[in-house]
Length: 538
Image 1: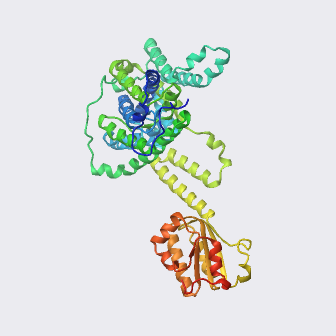
Image 2: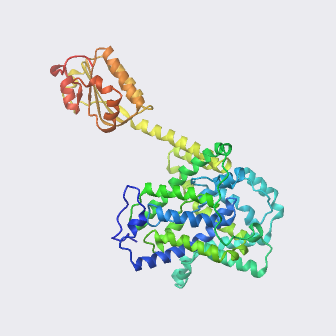
């Protein structure tokens, strides 16, 4: 699918894509968007409730989030086809916040969860266990499940296994049957989660199975949006919620932009990241005041939107209105939905979320990447997602610093570049710096002080792409060492950021008196004794 010719590419300013998408909008595109919006709304219905329940909230919290956040993200976002709403990525952090501080402290932000914790958190409902309070930690959940195994409900477990098998067949089996039974292709267009939810509800109602339902646990779903409520914030809780909030914001922003990028590849478009993040922020600021949970771009629903023929944000708006209509009209029917079926859907979502092939192909990567991936996975599952994020970011920074420092080097200028240089090697030393001159690579400059035995030192910085304050200080120290040893310092090739930072730190004021050159050839011509440049030590 390609973007309509009338729809311009995203600009860099703050402008909702809806305004651009509505240019030359016609009846044909409206019908496509309405069809796609209704389809995505049907797909989002069970997922929104399941994500809320898994997060320790009532199912209506997921629906409210999908409606309000989905509407705002489509109205104000920077992507033409992105669908916003609750995502499995939020479950781990949101459940921990709710368990410790309550619903009122679900503040602005996003996150990227881990599939293993989602699956483990659903074992309780999958097996129909009687657990009063499920802890948020891995070991807490493990011991709670272990202690409640004697309460296993065979009806709930059997129903959950059947639902999980049907979901797997719907995703993997129907595509194979299509070759021999073409009519099955029509079935594949129906969302598997919706089919499972409807069938499981009918089976439980018809056979009167003794399993827990949304109605028995939550009392059903209200037929209307909740009233605006001002959360009861306090400085005491805000102090503890700072790190989880930053984690939600950082990782959720990455997930949202990743989803928008996936959508761009599907429709040959380019989203506006600034506008998309602004819309996500506004949506996550407004939704909690109506009892919602954090929202972000959702890849599965966005892909469904595209494949269903969406051409503009109107499809996302229709998706939100579809959910609103269902909540207002069909909410009483939801009370018979079995929680075991919701648990099966979430376990299947968790399986699809996990990039399990990364573990199979670990040996293809270098050791730092392997250790980082395994450490973050282990810390997320066993300890806390926030801790895992912090460790992962630190490990990524260390790995990045190591790689950049290994790319940064200082080499002596070769004889082929300056034919006269070897004959005057005792008088002139010439070196070229590569990469970045930052705090992890300043030793390159410090080692140059061992070459201050001649009359001139030439530094070629044309391949230097970045200098930080530590690198600038190292160059200033080198300049002072040159003055102390009566060595003339010639600098050439400075451009872009290195030129700007050395101007502002005062380094160029030291070499500006005739010892700053545009390239190596002119610098060497001035530095060689036979063609000495301006007099005076730098």
